[in-house]
Image 1 (tube, rainbow, N blue to C red):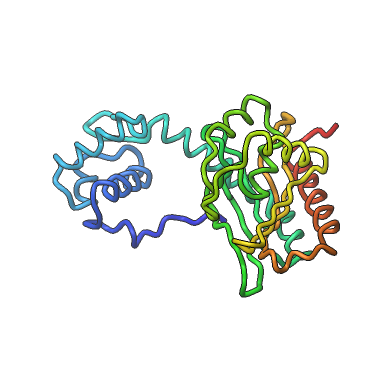
Image 2: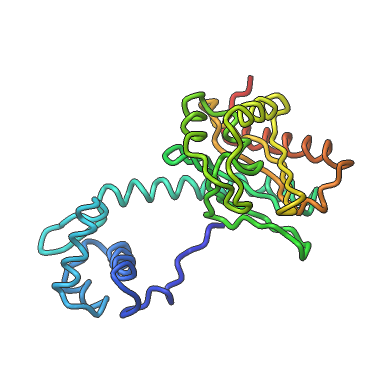
Length: 265
């Protein structure tokens, strides 16, 4: 499951303005009913004037709103973000059985990602690690670019044309390799191959010792929702296993699409 905030890292008196804002949001969220300014200042062990300035920052962002009697409560943006996060947690819970089943078959790191249309990236929302000491793990809540690796490319290949163009336009150097992004011509050729075989296969044996296979996961609106894949050191990515692994990943992604209500063809 995605990690939760460690209260010991948000203790009163710790950190600067950012940490104070986090503690203030915690205090308002945990209050029973509206949270009076005086009570918030006491809990954070800060002057009321300081807390008032912090509250104004959160009010301007629509994360908090004023309530009667000099008190405060969560705002509309707070509830919108909470709803989005709860939806992601629901995706994680529903995807877990499929993710674990894929892991049992291959004993390699298996990850589930969700597509983030706003910045054209993929968010890793759940990972089951390989038991092997040599491993490459994408931690939950990591963001990955769409032009690099199998998890990102398996999403990119199935996006509408305008979103593919936007993702390619912002393509940067490889986050791990430091290499420049492939040309648009080469990327479009690769995306066509991914669509034809219904999965992305990525290998970097020379520099990163990294390999992965991923397939797209679709939602009820027939749009790509994210991706499901297996990542491993390239030294364990045997050519003899590639066909079985790709079939297994495609099958698991199709099962997950069905779980999420994809109507199929």
